[in-house]
Image 1 (cartoon, rainbow, N blue to C red):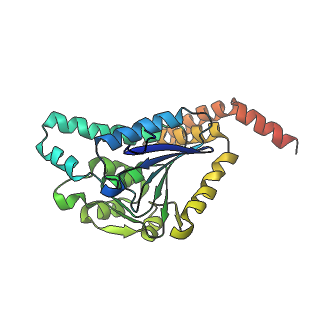
Image 2: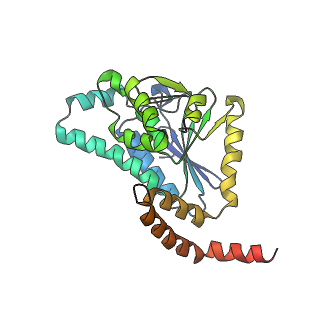
Length: 255
């Protein structure tokens, strides 16, 4: 997966694992190999103790333009069962991002469109260059971003989600941040350095506490208020028993 001919590259820089969509000539369009490669890279990087954060990014000028022409033709000619398998593969990727214990960050330069925008939306955090563009143009070809819908409506208001999904247009990084889809915007000229500074914050935090917080945040989705509080009690107790918490309390009391 790390060789130069691979459609997905996995590299490391200190505590950061970089998963790079490596089809710049195709604007990093998604196909079976890319989806499978990203899943494998997520599993491999999250199993490494030194990794504190995973970044998904794209080679070249764009993050990801969605499914490529070959993948679209495959969808058009596939049987029901084949389409189910294909859709489930993408679903598994979206779910895996939430189950990876460390934060998964989409670093978006250029365009993130259709399935590419869905991939970015599925990440825990999105940082974008000020020139980045986001959009879900699937309705223009009679397609429905069905799985992405369940992610997007948890990121932005229902009316914003409706507008984005049914009008098929693109929005700027500024607008994406304004509606809550994007967390941070960096200037294109200083993007790599600004991203490095942003990611370095995770080196100063408890890895176990971040992992427990991520799990709890998504686990309580859809729970009643009382059930969420009860789950919070359980995680609170688990956190107190971790080595990070005990060491943190010891350091704090010595100040």
